[in-house]
Amino acid sequence: MRLLALICFHFAWTAVLAQQVTIDNLQRRLKTLPSDTNRIEILNWLSFKYLPSQPSRSKQYALEALSLSKALHFSKGEIVALNRLGENEFRESNYANAVEYVTQSLKLAELQHDTINIAMAYRVLGNTLTFGFKQYDKALQYQLRVLKIYQKKKDMRNIAAAYGNITWIYASTNQNLIEAHRLADLGAHIADSLGDKQLLSYNYNSKGLIFLQGGKSDSAIKYLDMSIHEAETINDKAVIAYDKSIEGNAYLRLHNPKKAIELFRMAGEESKKLNLREVLKESYRGLALGYNELRDFQLAFKNQALYTNLKDSLLNWETTQKALVTRLHFEEEKQEAKIVELELANRHVLNENILHTMLFAIVLVFMIAVIILIVLNSRQRAKRNVLLKDKNEEIAEQNKKLQEANDIKDKIFSIIGHDMRSPLVSLMGLLSMVMRNEVTDSEFKTFAPKLHHLVTGTNETLENLLQWANAQMGGWSQTRSTLVLHHHVSRCISLFAEAAKVKEISVTNHIDERDQVVADPNQLELIVRNLVHNAIKFSTSGGSISITSYRTGEFVELRVTDNGTGIPADYVENLFSRQNTKTSRGTQGERGTGLGLILCKEMVENNGGKIFVTSEEGKGSTFHVLLKAE
Image (cartoon, rainbow, N blue to C red; front, side, top):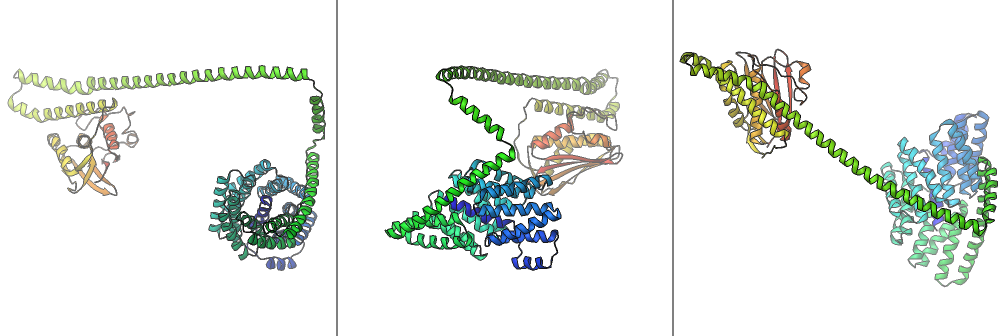
């Protein structure tokens, strides 16, 4: 039964390669064509079309195509014709002839680098090994090559066909049935999506056989009936015969011999017409079992005799075919010398005495012991290497962290020594003058705005420094909540009101009071403070700063725009980078540490947002901050 189903599959799947043209159209075209390459292609198509229903006519067309291809030196036509003849010989169980034809086709296809026909040859060779010689491992290798070629070509129809061939190998060995189900389902899905009735009937046939192998006869019958229905719509009589024969076995397992006998009779009658000897043999066997269960021993004996005679005939024929194929392979690969060597080696092995055997066993045991010691030593060495590698990685990670800590320390000391010390020295000098009464009240009032500006800048630098150092040491924490953006921006603007007044800069809050964001309040205000402070620092006297907001999908975009000095284009790219060591003075010489924008980027991203800048040198800049909207 298993072999029957496998043979069924091969013949059915060959139709997948056909174009949707009718035999009548092909024959009409053939009558008007001269002896050229077009005629060869039509002959090969007709050979393919007649293969399931009239194999003798199929063979005639293939032989004519082969003869004409050789006369015209048309390699492609010769390759296809040889494949067609191989399929015909295979169908009639002439496995040696099939291998000979397909091997010739494969050689020509390889010379032409014709991957499609290479795949066709692999498919026939794989099916021959599966159904003819039961060499399932080699057959699977061929079918996997076929699948690889069609996957590369993205040929979905033939990918589904390859899935089916692999499925049948799994089913024939009663192994990997879960994978077989998966491939059959994929093939059915592809067939359904392509609207291909033939391909769909073959996949349902696959599912039926797999369920039968798994002992689920009811499910097998369901899918086989579905396969028969699809095959009847396209008049594929061979597939119908195969399905009914397999379904007969399912009914035998369900102890319904009458239904099984009905199905085996129909399968046998159609098999005789199509010369499907393997199917006919299995039909006889099924009828014998069915009549035996009905206790009609006369008919059971008659069909058993027919089964035995046909089985013996096929067995003798199969044995002859195997011998012929073996001879073909040896002649092709020039293996005679190797056979002689193997025979001599076998005689030598048979003539060895007990002493040699014992010595060999002793040496073998010694070698095994040495190998075990080597393996154990290698494993111990591998474990030590792994431990050493882990330690090295740990040391490297510690060195990296130590270097980062040193870099942080150097950066902090650099800022304290240069960016904070200078304004503090200036502040101390001014206060000393005040204490020595070297500055009058009116002069002090003149210096007061600048003093306030100096203190504000120093405080902002200190705040950035503390936040940055804390972040480098992993000390950041946050508590996100829903914040009214207008309120927090107003608080930040008020901190720099005096600094803006000194430079006669207007800072305007145009934030929509309805806009709310989800963020940590302290980090949000640090972001806004740094952007506003930068805008003031790089704005000229009499300039203006505008702070606006826009709702963009799931984000609220905060924009801080000034009409100051702008940023050079080559500087914008690394503006937010930790590797950026450049700092610029403001329009009135204000110092900077370079930390403000780095902090802004880290805190924006820490709150699930984004930051970027658009700027034109000499015309001003706009910093864009996207924060999660409530």
